[in-house]
Length: 126
Image (cartoon, rainbow, N blue to C red; front, side, top):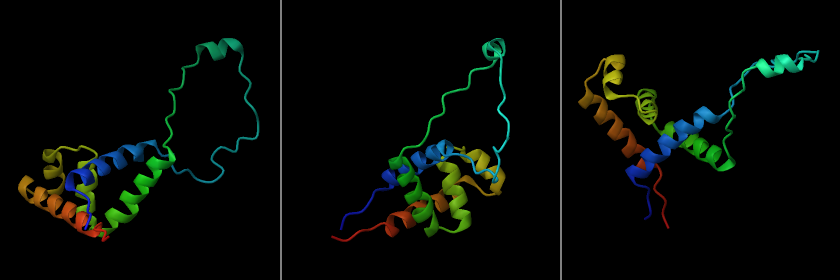
């Protein structure tokens, strides 16, 4: 029986939270359907702010994000999902305690139990 460790699950959750920021935003249809081209002078172009380089997620990163979000988080209840995803985004325990109205120990137990559920849901038999 080959399974996945809790540490690997934590790393994959953190990677998926990072990849989530790289994915394009969902926009309404015809968002960029301006019919006319805007022509700028060379002076206007020189004074414009340079846009930062847009980093796009690769196919492997999207596959990892899909595995984590669509398969792993589906094994959890919405409350557990909320805690696990916020911890993957490195939100401190103290802020989670204030937001959810629970003690750190209680949230940590829910988090640990959720990681255990993910681990047991990913057991593969050879």
